[in-house]
Image (cartoon, helix red, strand yellow):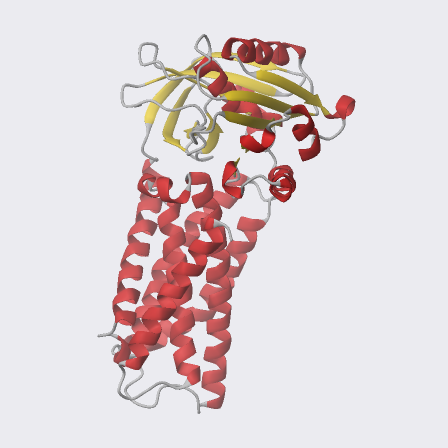
Length: 428
């Protein structure tokens, strides 16, 4: 089981445990319908609150989760889980009203009877909007700017979900762990929602930067950008990434850092490929002298595992974190022995020449795998090229399906799952 699925499962088990303990202490007991209505409401509220907290990008959670990329994947599944729990909540609640025999055996419906009508009236409209929002979040064809606005609206909707949950919580549950958890999750989720809304209108925290140089590789439609950052940038490590904002309306986009930090020059760099609606116009966006705001660094893809041998696999633009590490090792190729595989469909002789030079300076054995010439790179070809592969750790950055396939095949052949490190560089 992955850490992400384990986290979702343990979080919901904890909420279930609070519910069971609370119900056991209620003198009047609970019927199946009303009890499951309260439980599914708590699960939905809890997962929404957790997802919103993750959306604020709390750095203190990165070590335990393995990086912000894993936190964003967790955010995605929490959103899907919250929608599922909300649907079940709505279906049970409908049955509870239709058949009347289900529910709590005593006590008033709510401590806030004057607010009960509005709170119940919000339920179905909120659920419909939530379904639309989650669908937009999962649809890759939706432009990023529209996706971002819908996500912001979801933060605002949480306040109404919290209102619905608190107003309609059974009076018997208020003085129990269930009640305390509902109140705490409502407060934490609302605080996170307000933080996200404020950031949207006032801008995310970060440092000001200015583009000081660019180099374009037309064959692969990629641009290398160099920026000078302000004094409040505290540095970064090879393999980390940052969020870059060049237009407040467009919002921040994540890019992997491709340079070694030098406080004397205060320069950072990115390699950006034309992949979507924002990056298609990257040469105009990152023209010389353009201003940007940089937030970060984030990520734990930093090659720290203590292994004497490592295998790096960078597919397409996924080569970027390895470029940063090569430059860090330049002139001082200490550390593990490394084989770097660069799998690509598009070829730029200029870009490959720079990569070969960086690999030579870093003491790294480079394997360039051009699919049109060499076929598809797979686990067997990596094992054939690196005879002692089973003593190595594998670091992968590139398309998720490719990484999943490599992981599956290498683990099936004897690699420990903990020795395969994959950057999940998908923020939606």
